Structures are given as C-alpha cells and as structure tokens.
Length: 294
Ligand code: SF4
Image (cartoon, rainbow, N blue to C red; front, side, top):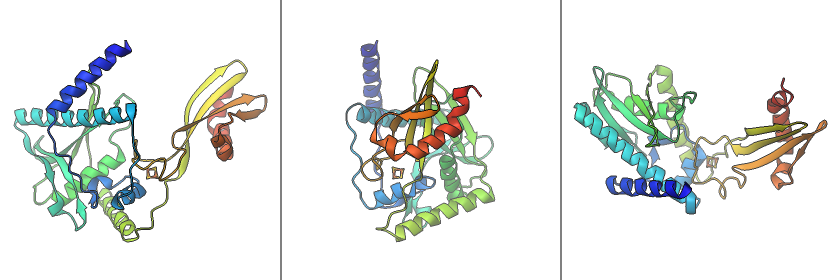
C-alpha cells in the first residue's frame, strides 16, 4: 500500500514539477508584505543572511512537493479565472507602490461580484470543518495589498482569500472575504513600523517567540494515563527555516507524562527536567479534568 502511494506521489510530483513554470525570485534583503504577522525574528534572520536550517530526506521531499503543488494549484485558479473572463492581473510585483525597502507580490486582481478586488490563494494540508479561516497573517497580508493598491488599481471590493486543500484526491476549499476596516489598516501600519524598527536595530535580534506547551494527545488505560505535551514556541510559521539551531533546540520535542497515584511522572528526556514546572502546570490546568473525567 505504502509503495503504491509513494508511486502515486512521485507521479504527481513529476506532473507538478513539469507543469509549474515560475520564477522563484525572492528578495531576501527586503521586507515583504507577507512578513506582516510572521515572527519578526525570522524576518530579521533572513535580512541578515543567516544560514537556514537544512532539511533532508522525507522532510525535504515533502517541502518540495508542497511548494510545487501550491504553485500548480495557483496556476489552476488563474486558468479558471481566465476562462471565466474575470482575471485582470496575476502575480504582479507591487514594489513601486510600497515604501522604500519593502516589496510584495499579489496573486491576482479579479473582477468578481461587481468590482475589482485582490484574490489570494493559500494552500493548506487540510481544510476540515472546524479549522479557523481566514488566518490572521493572511488577512493582514491581503489587507496591505488592498491598502496600497486601492486607488491606482480601482479596487472597489474587499480582498478575497481562497483556501484550497493540497490533496488532489479529496478536494476541499474555502472562500473568505476580508473586511479592511480602519482598525485592520492601523494594525497593518503598526506591524510595518515594528518591522522597520527591528530592521533599524539590527544586528540586535527581536526576541524568540514565547515558549508554549501544546497538548498533543492523551491515552488513559485503567489507572494509567500517558499524556504527550509538546514544548514549542508560539511560532506563527509551520516550518520556520530558523527553528532549531538558531532559536531553540527543542522545537517539536515530545514529553511523556503519566499519573502514578497523586504524582505526575515524566520520561527521562532532558527536556522533561527543563520544562518540568511548565509541564506540571499545563497538566494540572489543561489535562487533569480530562484525566479524571471531570
Ligand atoms: S524558531 Fe520561532 S522564534 Fe525562532 S525565528 Fe522561527 S518562528 Fe521565530
């Protein structure tokens, strides 16, 4: 079964690699509109040309696959909008509309539902019914495109975000309009100012994002409970290029804890010791009710 799936994956990857023609230019030394809402430290590390975390094997393959599949899904959207006659422009740099030192590129401007508007495509591993869309960082990104292009591009309607599941066998998508209010605009400007201040302060780096513990699972068998908690930053990036070596070596570590009588016990991972108090607090607050059935 696995072998069969791998073969299917490889075929899809080849197809996608063949059909996605895109320049991958990315100005590492400029601030990007898509940096708004991301971890400022990550952006500053990029501006400083910091070495990115190397990925190998399956992780590398997964990243490549995701990248090309995302490009392909973007192309499919442009083709569909083109066929409907509503595509005005696609993948256009807006550097000339932004303050010096900034750049950005919108996915598309479409003439849809009675006016011109920004349309941005985001691909997700899974859409599902309960996931929260739109994501804040995407809202601020398209709001910024809208703010800077509104007059010159005659954008009369609010931007749209299209979330598409990166699973060709189970199509799912979500369309979300983003209301660009005065407070959204104020937030975008404050984030841009914050990033500019961080850039002026280099080589000092913004702080590492606050650590948090993510509750990842629970198994209860009779008197025995096993609970996994994952210590991590409150990272806004799923796959930060600088996690690990540059920021913290503990991203994604699993901690196992179990209840023995009145006491919580931990696996002997060094992380358990380091985060013992945090984990205890987390377990008591978040997991105890579940464990006791309360
Ligand atoms: S690992 Fe976390 S804190 Fe460090 S740059 Fe990445 S997102 Fe930011």
